[in-house]
Length: 190
Image (cartoon, rainbow, N blue to C red; front, side):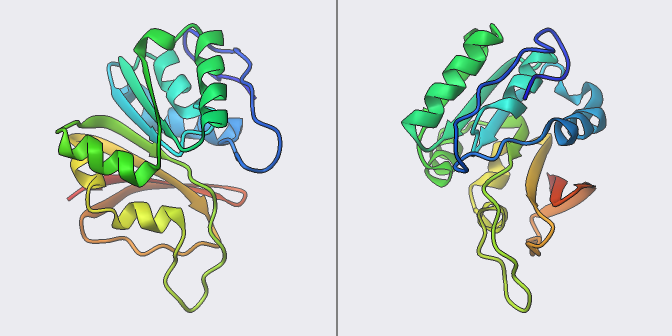
């Protein structure tokens, strides 16, 4: 796994062993950043369920001014630190070791806003005939998350295609990318 473009393009990223972290694949990241284009330049970025930090690293490498990465475990946060150090992008990074929903509430309470909010959380199970209980659905339902997205900002949410999500009225879908089992939704607040 590597950073695809920008000043740190080609930098290899460390990934924790096991299945606890499922990094956003290179081809999916490439499609995301081709779609975002110049939106990344000068952006303030929030990455929830950050894992390796690949999405934030890609943003910083392409001209984003800052990134806040939220990851629940100390072990995974250490991988984040190592990846940002290897890419020489540490100065513009804040790592919060906490639950994504707690971080969302705290950041919203403090009045923070971000131009780009990314979340590619662990996938949920197939939910035919019932409402999803996945982390992706919980993020869409989070009352704090919309206030974190700047007025012209985007929320980019990843989930598996077998996880059928309900889009609350506060979100408007701008674009959807599909790659294999991965779906990436580009959303704005209404």
